[in-house]
Each structure stands twice: as C-alpha cells, then as structure tokens.
Image 1 (cartoon, rainbow, N blue to C red):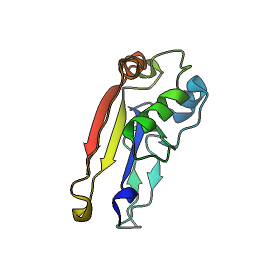
Image 2: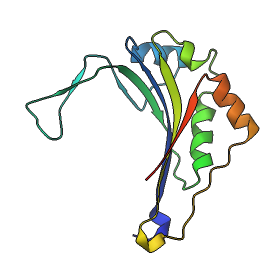
Image 3: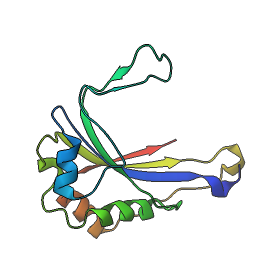
Image 4: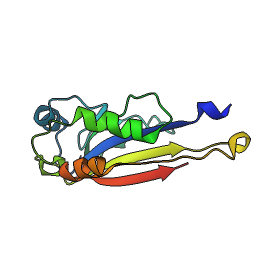
Length: 139
C-alpha cells in the first residue's frame, strides 16, 4: 500500500424507532445509499442461521466523492441536501441524526502522513440548519 491509497468518507445517518426510509426519501427527494426498517432481518456474516434483526430504522447517504480531502466528502453530502425544506431531525420518525466523518489513517509505511479537516462557518451553519450533529472517527 502506498500513502496515496488512504481513504476517507462521510455520511449522513438518520435513526429512529419508527423511522420509515421511504418517508425520509420522499421528504428529501433523494434515495439513500443504505437503509433499513426496524424489524428487518439481514444475514449474519458469522452465522447464517442466526439473522440480525434491525432494532431501529435507519436512512443513510454516503459520500460518493473520490478524494482524500475530508472537506470534499462533506461538501458532496451537503450539496445533495442544500434544498432540504426542514431540518432532518424533524422528519417524521427521525429521533437522531448526524454527519459521520471517517478517516482511515496511515499504515506504518505512511506514519508521517497527516489528515486535516477544515469546515467553514457556512459548512457548520448548514449542518446546524439540517438539525445534525457531527461525529468524527479515525482508524
């Protein structure tokens, strides 16, 4: 692996006991990257005989930007929701929501590589207008 193959991404995640993904999609006029309904089952990667049952509804939009710059991923997401008519946390069924910014750090070969995230006042104001918090994860 070389240093240029490091990865980052961002996503907007909405959760709720009664969240119906189709309701969120209809309000925002955009399809999620991934979603689940409460009670929906998926196969377990460890034990195919014991499916995983979703305890919450979830709607997520993941950045499709191909950049190492975390800001590019956030801008990609915010650009898709610039016309949202109401804060996302006020959509029927949504109990929690956040922007998740994920940085996959360097391996030993790239130990001097740094990551930087600069969000402007406009970015922060839009995230606040959308009714979202910010989570940052580094691996």
